[in-house]
Image (cartoon, rainbow, N blue to C red; front, side):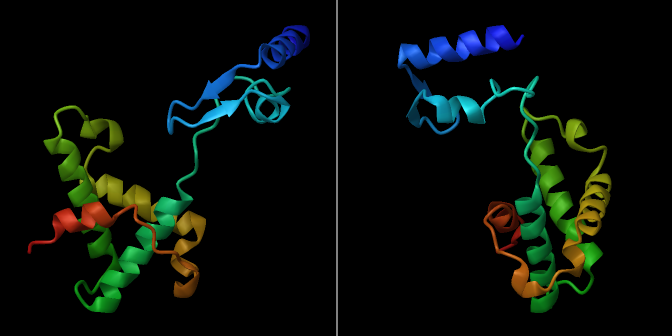
Amino acid sequence: MDIERRRLKSLLLKSKLDFCCPHCGEITRIDSRLLEAGALKKGRLGSPKKGNDEDFLEALEWHLREFKRQGKIKHRRTALRLIAGGFYRLLEENPKLDPEAVAVSAEALANRWEKKLRRGGFDKRRPETLKKRGVLVPLLRSLDPQ
């Protein structure tokens, strides 16, 4: 396998082709830096690992605390159920998505998020260390009864 990997890397470097990212459309010249960062690096077999959801969990924890701080909802668990319920409703209303693939119910989704928040230590962090990210803003706007 090493011989094929080296040959492929060599051919890609000699070809002087450009790589177009399928996600953002950015065009990058194929060079050794690009090849060393990707799947052709020795020891990396299979598809790349999925990204962790630390940004999402941090934003979720920030929004839960913000609900309590503003006095809109007294209990953290209620706020988490509200967010999970809204997300689950959006999945149910979209005919292209299957909500069962995400969770059995909104309550199960809230339980999973709560476990991840506790396991990651987000519930113990000081409020100033949490960053407000835009992950949940569209979801929260859709839940606002204005």
